[in-house]
Image 1 (cartoon, rainbow, N blue to C red):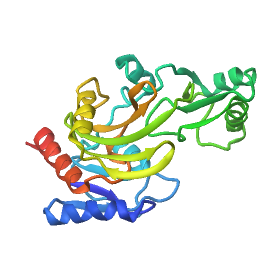
Image 2 (tube, one colour):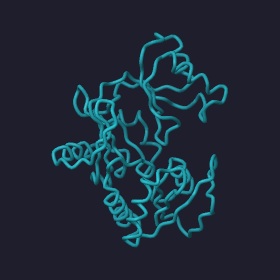
Image 3 (cartoon, one colour):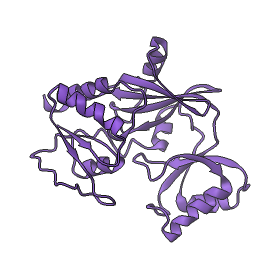
Length: 263
């Protein structure tokens, strides 16, 4: 059974999932999450944990706590430092890994106007990756001391030099196979288009044959001045769509889950 979050998400992302599930008689329940809590608006009454969540990172965290078998996620592998250890084609292979407290100390003494890319080490992110200055990193990280963020000084971050990105794609991988892909940015500008070019898909599939944090995940890729690079991996259960084939996504995940877990 799928568990689909019905609040705080783009209806244009959720409706195609629900329509596909209904059209193919795949059981599902929609749930709403109470803001700032781990509770559902209406209690979820199910007899087992063979559930596939799709929604926000909050829903994925609830699924992790309740050990739902359809959550395709492992905290030990969905980490920026682990990706860099296993793969040589990561975009930010030069990243330094440190805690928020260490970042405050390091960047307080750095050239204030120097520019860096910062993101959390873990997936199910505490904040989104961003390009900013050393002065802003030191100021922003220090603000956790006064409760401005929901993470503390022990949260691990990855800091690297910014890269020149020409094009960016998102690929949904199910059982090691790319099932749908979409272009989403060109030279920093949002540009969304279904990726149907066999050569582009084949090149992405070749990268998907290498180490993955889970055989079912999302892989973002970029064309850079140094060639094709993997930007990051994300949990498939909480990754948004661009111009993806959502019907193919739903059916592929359902078949994978049935064959892997229920058969």
